[in-house]
Length: 197
Length: 197
Image 1 (tube, rainbow over the protein chains, first blue to last red):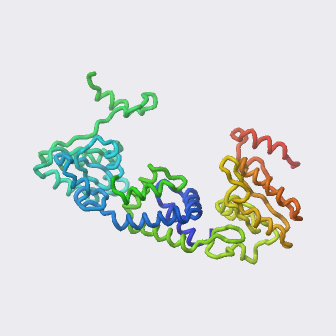
Image 2: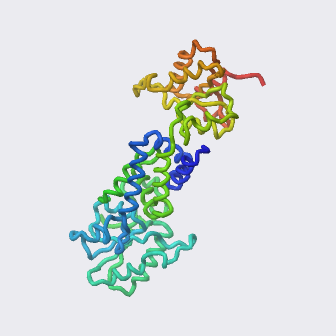
Image 3: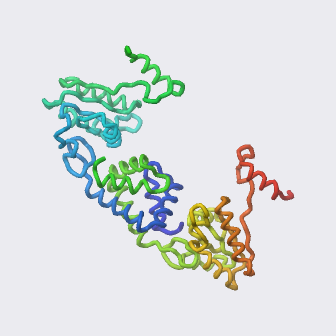
């Protein structure tokens, strides 16, 4: 392990989310054993993605073009903008296939603990987009965490003088959820928002 | 996710041990958000390690030189050779600091299920090394699994006509192990190999 090149690779890999020093070492061993089929393709895929992928100046999505393919897609409903915390949430919504409007990626949430204020998020550009005539609804699809909900309330206040509808994802029992294992917060929200069958 | 470069990076990363499609997506998002500080350094570290790291022709270790720095180190005890399954095991022994001899990395074990026979392991070169006059002991530090122990017995048989001592790591209760949580196999081995205090 005194080998500087291997050691550096372990240290860089260990900075990826989900990998620690131990799993980074395992990954490096796998890479070194499969140099032609795994290590060089990974280096090439990284270099190529770093070069080719840009951040969409309109919505904040990662794509090969700016504006991104979602913003340019003529089949998408331009009257709705779904606000998400990061691109991973955008991908999750796209995988669900349930949403056909546009997005706005904040790249973070407000966080008093981590010192992130409104100026570090893309809220000004969201306001500009909300003021366009074609925009009718802003859907706040933020995580059901303290920071996510704080951010949702902050955005609602900032958009108070716009004419758009500001909506929030429904909260309740998740699909397949068993009541026995749900937390009290989820249960009380679901009970308060109960509806007629 | 229709973005081919991002998608390819996710697929290649997901082939690393310990990462699945979901954690590979998270890792790619982290990489894209930290292009200068994480993504390009990782691509560079991979390319450099792939170029610089070679497999030691004597012991099978990964290093920048061949023979590797362990084989060349004049302070290491050349009379002992510790046989391990892969380079990760060598690193684990080096981290323990308990061993100052040489190594021999098999790069695998015999496995009837996966169709790996003796010819796919570096057993012939181990035999050559065992026959050298300076070699006095071959320590079989193989995993305490069926495949590891099968390989250990096979190597002992192959080295039967050499004059070296062939030894095996002790089996028993691991440091900090609580009897309540140990399996029956470990307990019975530890009981059978009990020693006088």
